[in-house]
Length: 56
Image (cartoon, rainbow, N blue to C red; front, side, top):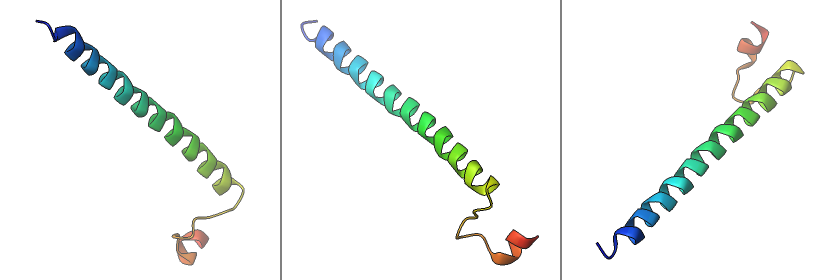
């Protein structure tokens, strides 16, 4: 039991860090989707989109 606090703290810190990364990626994904929607609404299309798809 001498290392239980150390192990619990390590797991807790790791879970907190991973959770923070997940939240950061989720927030960033929402921001990128909003930027993409704004660009598409202004008429700018993706380079990967075919010309025929853009006209349809």
